[in-house]
Amino acid sequence: MSNTTEHGITIRFQESDRECAGKFAASQPTAEKNQQVYYNTLAVLAVNTFMEELRYETDLDAGDSWHPVIRMFNNVADLVLPGIGKIECCPVKVGEEAISLPSEVRENRIAYVAVEFAEPFDKVKLLGFVPAVVIGDETEQIPLSALKPVEELLDYLYRIESGILELEGAIKELLSSPTEDDPVEAKVQEILAGISIAEIVAKLNIVYRSHEESNWGYEGGKALAGVGSGGGILGGRNREDSMNKSSPRGISSDIDEDVAAELNLIAEDLLEKLAEIWGDGDE
Amino acid sequence: MTRHNAPVEPLQGLDSVAASFNLLLLPVTGGEIKPISLTLLLLARYGAIFSGIMALSQCYPNAPVNNELDLKVKSLILQGLDEAEAERRTTIQSLLALTDYLPKSKTKERIDIGLQPYYDEAVKDTEKYMIKRLDKFPEKYDLDINNASPSEVCQCFVRWYNLNITRDCIDVWRRYQRIRFIDLDAPSSQENATSKEETIADPKPQPPIDEIEQKERFQQLKAYFETDPEQRLRNCATRKYPSCNCWELIKRRILTSPPQTFKEIKQDLGIPLDNITRLWYNKSVPLLAKIAQEIGYEIDANKLPEIEEE
Image (cartoon, rainbow over all chains, first blue to last red; front, side):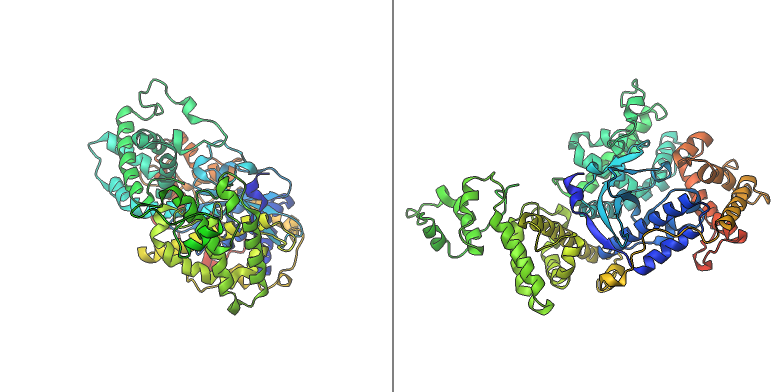
């Protein structure tokens, strides 16, 4: 276990938390599913308490984990931060060395928080987090050694929150401009419409922190297109390996060069806006 | 860890500090104090807080953090824990004065650059919060303060301070941005828990009350989704892409194991991602809950999401 997990943050449950988890678990069809829902619910409630302490607005009801049917069929423990995105709260038992990511939680998340359970289950420890953008599409586990201290979640969320505020107008404008006669613009709009603003900001945050300003367009364009910097750093398949090598911009084959060029320009423009609020990017 | 990069400012009383280290501060007339300036100023600032602990670390800037600093932090925390909340201000102020010298602590210079303009205002809130919540600090980090090493206590204190100052900076930033935030005075659910005794350990989740009944009802629900007997699910589709209907999405995201991601569905159906996600969140998700309720699942009517029109 890494140093970062040695002193997680302890969250103590209230009786109402356990009642809620028990109620959700009781309507599951099998004992195995019963346990899964019980721990998932408590994990969400623990992170919810933590986020409330940090004065973040949360919406439990908006999560799949609070939906009676979705939690019955899927293995989900998501917590919605309105206007920002979803955090997946991943239960882990003492002694385990990684958190598991079922396929249903590998999209539409901004971060994964590891929540450690130990008997007598009156409290849990938040071990740390991983930003979702470093998870590849096929990452099934995150080793605990890869976790960042949970305190840094605040810095990460601030980046996303401030970035959303900064870019919201520009992205809405991009998505609303007419594209009937321009297939390139139409394709760009389709790509951007498929990503939430929070995801766009999170992807650009990685580019901002990892690349020189001279590469912002190229790397940012790739991130928006869903290849390269925006995902897959931690485990899983490196999608860049499978992209069309003949493409001069290194973008996958289903995105033509004009679309890639346009995405590069958009990414560069958005990153320049973010640089104004994020400063020089030094940690 | 080193503290050689800690920010410093000259302090009054430099002469006496210099004298205590047998250094001559007075410059040649018209000259500057450059030859000894930085080191001496560092010494002065530290010396003003507690004398004598800086000499070694300044001679060896890469040396491990001085144990005396950790000891000082630990003793101040213990002192604060012994004090009543109303008497704790001076102790917390002394702790906050040390944060500039603690490795990895978020000083004004080290906090996210976007938050720096709000730091001075936020640190007042942080002080108040730490006075009020110092009692919760050991529990939050699962620390047995009396028996923990000073370095361990100090590391946890830095993490706690970083969390609090960042949260308060974001709060002030939000105030200036005039965006929504939760009432600062509203206690969180955890803060309402006054003692360990309030929470009763419950070792394991209880099995379903009536497992057979739960299984039967689940099978009924599953069968409904599989067959869509009233064609409610397949008739719920986007106008532009009839093949993208609620039934199709439910089969792929609920009945398939592992469920398909939106990206995979997009690739299979050749439909833009936002059309798929809109149909899912606006129509399919509410419909799932409604059908479950009709089959007999207890669902709070207030929590049933409304099905939005396309």
